[in-house]
Image (tube, rainbow, N blue to C red; front, side, top):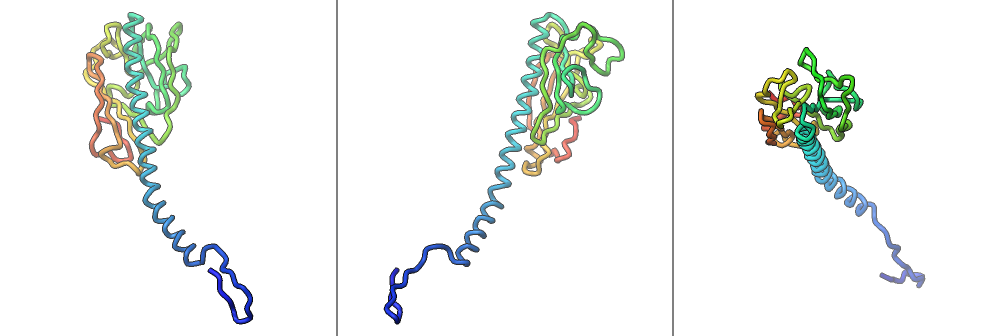
Length: 204
């Protein structure tokens, strides 16, 4: 807008924001960020949870398939280095799959023995995800040549569950965990665990 002042000089209003307009804009951005950021964090956490669950399910299927193909015992165990089974920590540190032709007492932990070769290695998971098994799957999951899940001593595996869980505060407790159950036939089912806190306790 143009106007004339008393001395007949032409005055022009310069473009830009006033201080009030700038403060209003900043306030709106702060409000939008407060609404959008938690939603984005929840989306990312859910994506990591879904990816990790798919990784574990795929690894179990791979282990079972290899056992049938090789006609012998194949084991999947926790592993941080890709060469040996870990006896501490949880599954999120990574895991290996190997043809387990030699199994020695005690039967509590799997091991890659002389002459055995690691077939597959999955590195540590990312995205605030923890993976914990109950007593039947805290250290390893093993399949025999007929595709049945077995303990290292040859006994049938009654029941085993591996829980994939997000520690993110952006996910509700009734959505933060997936339980992967393995029955004695080797069949795998995935369910959403109810009321799991961010501590992500192992399944019972």
